[in-house]
Length: 235
Image (cartoon, rainbow, N blue to C red):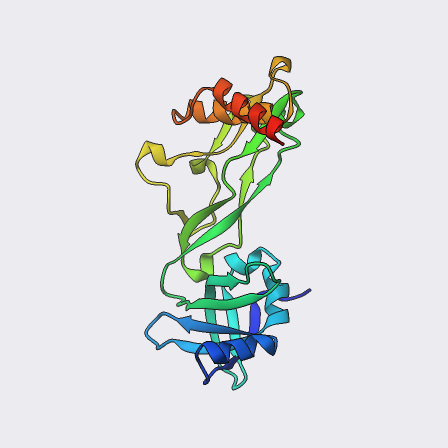
């Protein structure tokens, strides 16, 4: 199995726009590591290796290890990746050092499970919507998972799964979830679409508007459906 969390790098002495351009032409990525109590260090990475690694979502939600030729290793997380506007090319990367003793904040992808087995998933005319794709968490590096699972197996028609219902591994906290009731937002919901509402973009828009209206933050479903119909005519 390919290891997406370990990258080989070389220390870069030659910096500047001209040097970075030459590196890219040679199939290398200019990068920098910063953070902690150490000075920033300029690096170069092999473009093909990084491109292959970043096609996997865990690359951006994992603690990575960068190894340089002299045997030194450093745990890091990706903090920024600049891509070419139209070429399949990574222009520059920023990594932040990670300490095993310091709490780290990262955005983790959500994996939805149990949807087909849920009462809502089996109900005719019910649309299940994923309202969040990722959440920010705080944890020590050793406790940080690669993703969080959202169990939809108990979701019923007209029901919802809230942020506070996500089962968290030990030592992991949701940054957005506070004592404020409004912070406990919907992660997924199930809305019934009647025959009169139709299908396609209009139905999806009405379902989304209905869900948002329950949260007290959206216009009436009819307005959303009219917008969706207008978009469909424009297409």
